[in-house]
Image 1 (cartoon, rainbow, N blue to C red):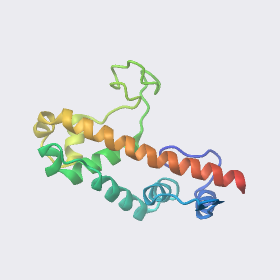
Image 2 (image 1 turned 120 degrees about the vertical axis):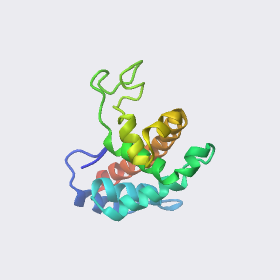
Image 3 (image 1 turned 180 degrees about the vertical axis):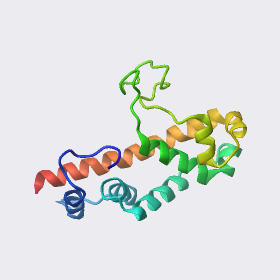
Length: 162
């Protein structure tokens, strides 16, 4: 269905588990809106979850570089696309250890032309700004990874308690 997951559980199982909240001394355990959007999109196939995730990513795009500031929506879409693809590198089998094929990521990159199309610019403009774009996409990739980890931990915790 998407990136990550909990084996053997359906979208309905996950929705039920996430819908429950566990009481702690500080109150009920809740997911951040971004992690909840992750669950809704990745595990339940909810299009509004996808829209919420894209909006959350776009808000976090850094305006430190002029090109990135001008193309916030496209850079957010690129980071989202790369996170959702998660195509494991066949050279290092996802380990990312000193792998030149995947540039130490463990996953295959989209081509430069494909990345430019997602951002909505000519590939020459992409090439001139590739380093800044890649750094920003990797930063956003990590933020989305935190949302995924939080969602997966919550699902695992809730399914153990059921």
